[in-house]
Image 1 (cartoon, one colour):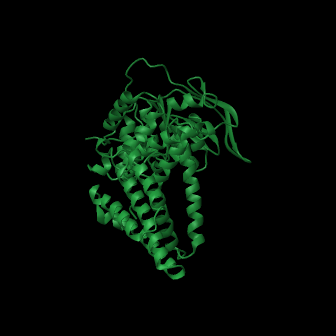
Image 2 (image 1 turned 45 degrees about the horizontal axis):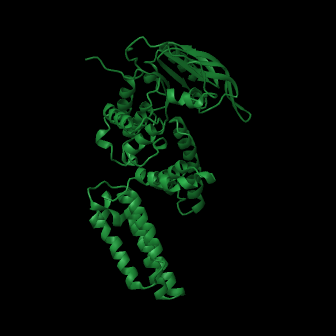
Image 3 (image 1 turned 90 degrees about the vertical axis):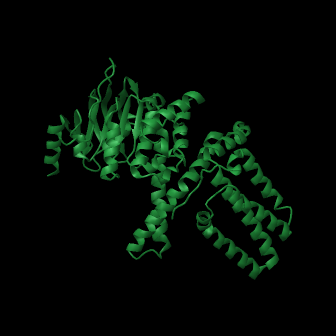
Length: 244
Length: 199
């Protein structure tokens, strides 16, 4: 049997969805005297995009710009035409975000309480909220853990809970900031399998070249600039050359 | 250190509404100030402790978790016995013990989300004065949620400094702990914002 690689494979489209679009219009980000990102000009239409680069290259800032957690110092980022600063609230409804450390994104003491906290912000009403929580617990196989203290879960379970929280909002986009860095091989596989099947557009910041290799498009960041933008094979080769 | 907060059980204590349990705790807090009779206070402590087996909680585990608090109470009593009187020490220690037992029983048998709902309702009259009940209850919930996380961070920092032979230096423990906690607070704030919750 051929080895099955985990990663950012594109799930089949279910209908004639509009083409998703994230646009960076001459974006620069500075922190004090330091330029974190400089002159980023690009449009993302693909459904599986990976962002790779050395530590401090601006990857996490790039990811945070997409859901308005970080504001550009110059330029603008738009998601489906919405400015991520001016329409921050709506953007967060449509752009889910998964952080590196699951411990820092679980807010409530129990698994079910944490999901309820997320869904409450949507103001759907009790029946719809319950239905959505049940569905998401089932999808991510967390039903048996619903009454467990969130701090007692394994790293993979915590990251799945964080993913479930993001997916509760039914976003169109999902931004992942090194989602598997702190996970062991088994949990990494578990989380990436869950991400694999998503219909959403996924932008994954990662150091894991195996994951990046499965993306449709890979951006290589270096010193706050896009040093390479292309197919996974070419981008990873360019990154290896840069790192040599 | 493995800290446990809410423990799910099918018991009459768990079944009591959160608001009712909170009211009982507040009433107990007032009543213990109205008497300095050690017998009455002792009776109050026995009543509070009786709640634990009634709630079908794992007593050895809870005793293990509460041990540091018992040590603090013992030091408190000894200090009073030495510097004021045994009588005063007994009364004050019993008052603290009742409140600690009551507070533990409340957090072990009540889901934080239920307590949050009670707090939100209770604080809503203060909204015109500028207090946001949702934010206040979120702060409460997060305090509870992050007690075990901070305890684990403390253990990690202590082990790291122990490896360097610096575990007896309080600054070597407090500085990294403070930095890590502040960094964590920033990340948590980002995560809450990313969930679309207004802060």
